[in-house]
Length: 333
Image 1 (cartoon, helix red, strand yellow):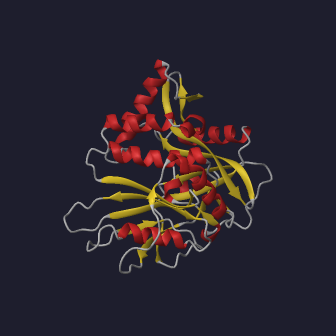
Image 2: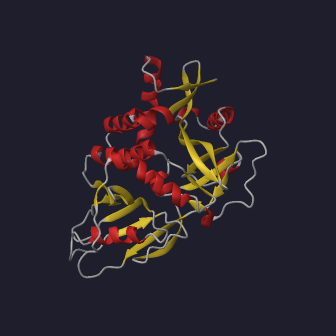
Image 3: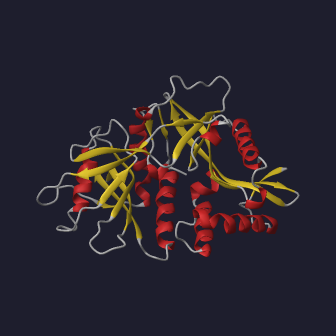
């Protein structure tokens, strides 16, 4: 059994990749056609961040696909130190190969590879509960989904809001890093990762044949520099009169209170006066409380965050709870 990287153009890799996409599309296609699903996956690998930090990998035996996954490389903050982490996503076993331990072998190989490359942690998001991955040494980091209510008033706040651009990515990354320093665990992105995150969501929306989704990315600036941002995934209602759904994928503000985030959301709501307010949800971190927002916890998020220390002697003590973590839904993989 060998671990192979499928990013290349050599024909055997294309055959394996086509098999992975054919069989995983019904589960993870998210409304895309099979062709669009392939385009979306390929486009992520062509971004500057994707070329260096993302790979599609497969466990192969004599040309036969046994299991596959996406392998990411992140920088995270853990207890005041920036460390490398390997992210494991889209773990998939072909139906004909299930029940033989191939996925667990693939995960162990990815952890071994990450350890050899200097990664201190492995992390993943599970949609199948925690028990399977706990048997492989992963532990749950709790996080919740929240409802966000924006307090409105007559007119819009006097806050300049403009569309975010690629040139804003460094400032947005810095805003994120300044905030994460107040938590024990969180993502430390660079400009390329910010642009990757925005592009990934825009490509998904653009390839959706229903046109039901859009991505809205806005910043507020001072002195020609972005100092606050919001990234929204907007889903149009299926029935007339129903509210839109806004998934607040990420946001940030250099102001510790986060008042500009609240003001930006007020501005965005004021674009359509008289309409039903959207349903806004987010993985909202504790300790961030813009005065214009009411935050109501809904309960455990469907995607379970899990981590596993890889570095010898690395102990996460005490174990992370929800208030220790700064991680947006837009940063899940």
